[in-house]
Length: 385
Ligand code: SF4
Image (tube, rainbow, N blue to C red; front, top):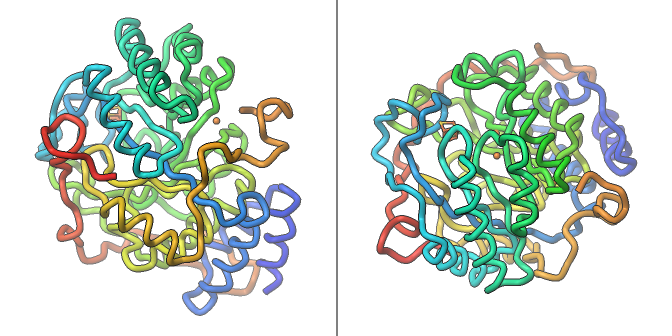
């Protein structure tokens, strides 16, 4: 298939595909799916071998957010019956992080609900970062605290944070449909503040919110331009009690096409399979390891993932290996010392394939696969790691 040969060549050269080529990946047929995975897998192996980096989420503050992001169970007015609690103490967060590190996590992601941190919140998170680093010198710490105000990224960097996450989530054109309390430009600004402070930027997307192929390509091209080191790809978990509870649009095959497209457009960055993998990829998760080089171990912020042990077994059974603490994740040319930038979610088919249907078709809801998190941070029960 000429399309795939072209995309592999471009990926190996870190050259940007055209929008039509990215759209064509999303428009491939089920008959072509394994060829698409194999092609994007070549690009993945060129830059990351068969290594899988494990990230571990610690939800420092859960629920009660004043923002209205429609996909989020922690949003203003959410009726989702999630755990709700205010800031974990540094010792509690350290304990949760230790469970993830013991399970093989190389990066701990400290996440808090809210529009953005106050200066006092930054103090609190700084103490938590220091406590984690004291115990695990090599572990990477990523903060995800919402929109940053001036100077806060520098303070987090000084406290030892390695990375900052803030997702673009969806295309600029549709951003106003999913959130009204802040803008797409606010999000871009925070990612740029993190980069300017020397934090490794992590910024990704959420697929499955009823967007078109063109929207997906838009957000992924915007991410390439923003040049984060990590791109988490979330698949919407339509939680009961949120406005998007009925938005079941994703099949395992579509998830794999989306991940392949992200890999072709962002060949040499950490592409991280994030929330929703168990719910939407289901038994196809191992195939996704040929496309992404990173996953979250264990549970998500407000929902449960499969057991940490099952994650580790899946990686080994699929022929991949967990990335060790001392191995550099990013290719040499992206390492900060090499001048790299250092690290929160229309059809056209030039290959002759049929244009993909607009993904507005609603599929059967798999609410049986969605479990609200009831263990780990903020509870008395052991974390899943
Ligand atoms: S995504 Fe973040 S800012 Fe938006 S509602 Fe959820 S916790 Fe709040």
